[in-house]
Amino acid sequence: SQQGEEDPQALSIQEGENATMNCSYKTSINNLQWYRQNSGRGLVHLILIRSNEREKHSGRLRVTLDTSKKSSSLLITASRAADTASYFCATDPNQAGTALIFGKGTTLSVSS
Amino acid sequence: GAVVSQHPSRVICKSGTSVKIECRSLDFQATTMFWYRQFPKQSLMLMATSNEGSKATYEQGVEKDKFLINHASLTLSTLTVTSAHPEDSSFYICSARRGQLSYEQYFGPGTRLTVT
Image 1: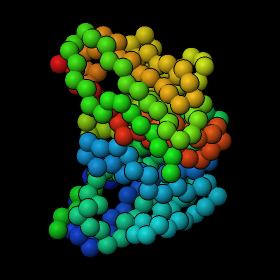
Image 2: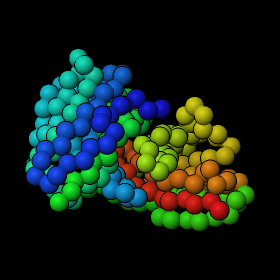
Image 3: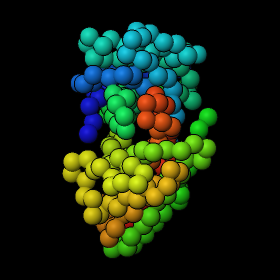
Image 4: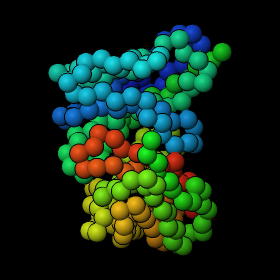
């Protein structure tokens, strides 16, 4: 099952610009996580935000969470060519034994 | 941090044969592991939840007789794709929770299956 919807599906920007990706979900969550995936590779965990948090920062990443709207955003500031990848949000109900459910993802292309 | 490994990383097999993919938690015990499938340019789709010592729970639309899951120990889950067909070609990724109530879920590097 897949409950997240990301937009945009694809985003092309220049180096140095900011990239914003949005994620919406349908059910209640304990936390929401963002992952990056380079083409043909595994997932890299970026950041986790708990349901009682509204904003979180990690380096050039800023994540927001609005549980009333069931949405989250990931902002990458001062983007670099190396940020080119697919980005997925994943929701975690954190009920015992449950899996993360992934959104459809945003493909980010950063050109130099 | 915790590490989850998968073996093999890539496999090519002929149509009609079976392929086994292993998922191991290297430095923690995982009572629950998850198997995902990812088609090109798509997201990860949960296939099944693998529970140590009991039967796996499959998501709707996933054939349990085709995708056999065995979680024989607290550190190993296996996914066997039986009678593989070209449409089974995909990227298979496993993950494991360190504990039932842990926020942290660790992903394996994935297995690229190509069925010719």
